[in-house]
Length: 264
Ligand SMILES: NC(=O)c1ccc[n+]([C@@H]2O[C@H](COP(=O)([O-])OP(=O)(O)OC[C@H]3O[C@@H](n4cnc5c(N)ncnc54)[C@H](OP(=O)(O)O)[C@@H]3O)[C@@H](O)[C@H]2O)c1
Image 1: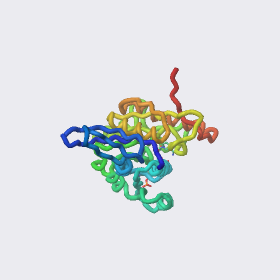
Image 2: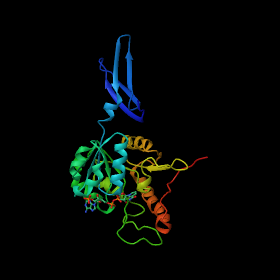
Image 3: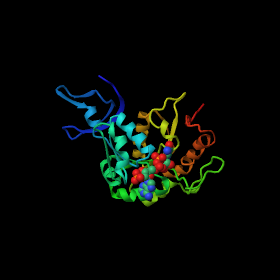
Image 4: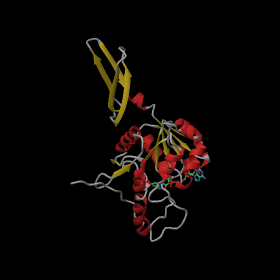
């Protein structure tokens, strides 16, 4: 039996109208709950996990990398694009848990959404997806507000300002969506279970605490330590980490680094 670490939370309505919260640590095991002498129920965590669906808005390297990562970890994934043809090669070897559709199809499909489009068109992509399809869902926001102009001395230029991040703009425009900033501060090649000298840290933020927790669990599954920076305002500090990450890349072509938060 292959044991894949995973944390799945379940809420079960027991016969006596009592809710029981269960945390499932491994996908391929059955949990047995005993109540009193005769009452036993079994829950197959794998079946419950299989219900988790990820809708990814995007067809670029981030969408494809995270899509492959989620599939590797047993999720069902739909990538959304305006041109499904360009994803046929990606789709070819992904098996039955992968699919491709429009932005709207992916937004409807996902229990959790990943936003992985050019920062400057992030709002347009959500309009195409249908904001109502994202209401009250966790949207993992990987975008950076990179301006369409040349970098200066290897430093990217942003169209956002230091006191208003892209994610805050999106959060204000779509207040019923639970945005969580994540995956924006590392190159795509290291996003899923990177092998590094020490565990890298992903900085996250967002207004909804439950959504931040959900994203933190995904990040742990993907091999990251998580630094939860609180509300969406913190995206003002997290989005510029991409500028910092990109300097060694722009200047020397380096892309094997990530941030790590160390304490005493
Ligand atoms: N590349 C990295 O290593 C990396 C790392 C961290 C964060 N990020 C951030 O992640 C995001 C995705 O990056 P990426 O390199 O994978 O892809 P990208 O080239 O920045 O973006 C490609 C996506 O943008 C969409 N798009 C472009 N113009 C559009 C428009 N007018 N309306 C709607 N959608 C439009 C495309 O949609 P179609 O599919 O319809 O063409 C495509 O899905 C970016 O915000 C980037 O800053 C990138």
